[in-house]
Image 1 (spheres, rainbow, N blue to C red):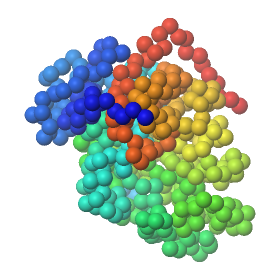
Image 2: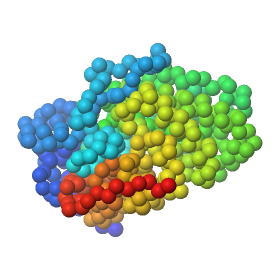
Image 3: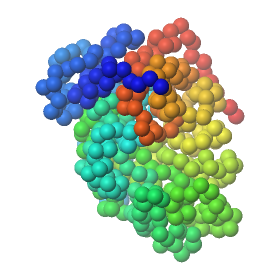
Image 4: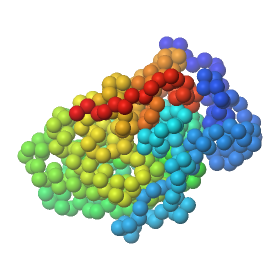
Length: 457
């Protein structure tokens, strides 16, 4: 497999010196690449100051960027909130649709966007040299994901390097467990370990309401990130779905079979319902906490929902996701919700009934087929196979174009169909975002009439 060209290496180095140059220096020709190479004198500046410093290079280009992806606001109401939840800052209270980031607008399915926004699941992590160096200094994952300064630094690493349209909090779906009375450890060999799996009514009764004092690092990190990003990208938070979290809580950690929790559906259904209901309440509050702290879009990961037969998912996962969505639509009506299930080919139509705004497609679903099945009244996210990032760059370019054309010119967030793989070349990640920024819907779909697609019944 041919390696990245010297030009690709130079582009990555230039991007690290000034991560926003390609966003600011938008080129009017959608087929040409953005200009490269700004003065090194700005390399010491924060992202916000860098933008201010480079703005005078091209006022017209800056205006174009601000029109495409400007500052946003948190839109969660604060009535009936617990006293421990932070109040929304007045500066985050309201904003018109056109002042919001491109990703948020695409999630809502707005018309007239210039291109699809893009981010990557696991875009902060082990494939980046910067992250590897930091992990050597801080070898504990719990430390990295539960220390404000480290969370902020790791979250910003891919934003500084690649300038994606979405910046997702560096965290873990199990992070809130200690806040509801479920301690856990992470073993290098086994992954998450829960010493006392929850399998009885008594254990469910011992679970506590979510305590945000134990999650202050999440709120603090989101507030700092919202300020640092300063409207140039959407800030995403995320949670695990109740079923997926319950698999860890019941099994005591990772599993390939899910035998304990699957058998509980039949041997102890009331215990499992009690656990899932408690998790749904806690996760709802956790989403609201993230939004109040600055998150502008939330992704719900039902990572192991795809391990269930569709009719079982319908009974044991969907109702609790729906419970969360209904709560958020009341409390935070303007915050888009994305639902991602790994292995969701058999669940797409059922997923729409949860009420989320965006359905994430994994890489095993053809985007064109997924769009036909879902219709185009709901937004979609995805779904480039992460393995394409190991391909020659022209092959990756073609796949990006194929996915975008299949998704259509509205309601699409470009992403991978799964998280970034370990050892993924950083140059390929950079190329992914470079290509996306060069896309223009009016060129890709010139002369096309958008067909209204109704979801498959």
